[in-house]
Length: 233
Image 1 (cartoon, rainbow, N blue to C red):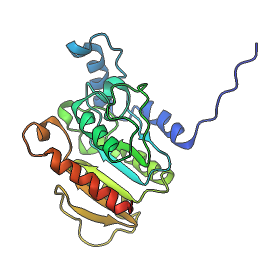
Image 2 (image 1 turned 90 degrees about the vertical axis):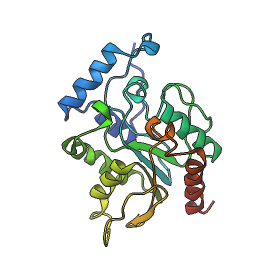
Image 3 (image 1 turned 90 degrees about the horizontal axis):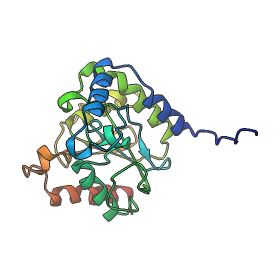
Image 4 (image 1 turned 45 degrees about the horizontal axis):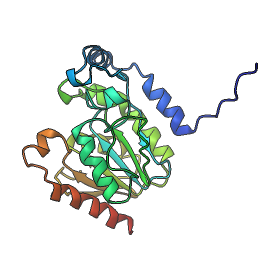
């Protein structure tokens, strides 16, 4: 019996396959695999992803969200950005309320989540120990941001979640996107531009920020209202 004809990969799918097979950072790969082996008690019945995590979302997105890195028991478990952890609960609820997602919860990579006008990726594609990738590890992932930028041709707004995400995006694109002038300082609610892109800054919706009140629901919701305003609809 002849093999079933395979659907050709889109360029973003091909990039995703390249990312998930990446072995550029031995320390991160070892950490991801160890977390997947040991697991967290509440997820002991899960088969962890344990690999680099590709971007996720609408290929025609006008908004590109860049986070820090996969969470050890979130995306490193589920295989999809911001899925299966508290940060993801905050993010997808806001996306749903603002018309960017078809549902407000994301618990697995097969839960039916569909994003509209949004693409999500990160500065680092592997879960780092203590959520702290090294400068060298961030540099190793930079080419993936460049390739996403080449493919996400409709992007108008980049939403950076946290200072590391902002530093990484600026370093990657300030020159290639004809950036000019002094780099803007990171601050929640801060806005700047890189080339034709509008850049919106926000604290990352990590427990460290949300449990301490550094990032409140009101602050978080205001970010997405600003993003909608920047898109003009």
